[in-house]
Image 1 (tube, rainbow, N blue to C red):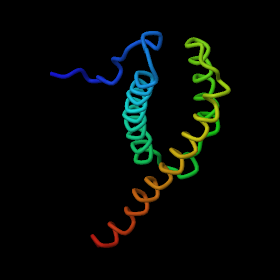
Image 2 (image 1 turned 180 degrees about the vertical axis):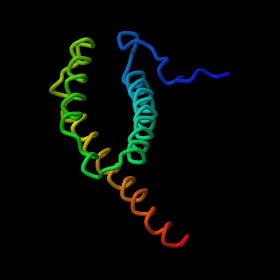
Image 3 (image 1 turned 30 degrees about the vertical axis):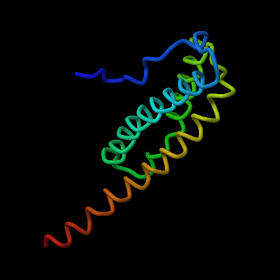
Length: 118
């Protein structure tokens, strides 16, 4: 069986000998990031099914919690939070917008289905 995350197996940056090597590794990482973000979105979609109130889709406390965890991860990985923060804010904004769409689709379809069944 193939490894579940083959794109995570790369060569260290210091082993890259030329720009083709560097670009190949960046492309590999980009593919892995998209795969991970796609997985993350499945949980966002599930939240849209689970939440009962539309007002809970955007949760400022959770947004701040996520950013605090990202900041801690950045500190551990020696990655600048100044780069990560705007990326995560945009990611969360996009995911929240998508969750609103899912919520509205799921919750909006229920009353129509009940009417059709009567």
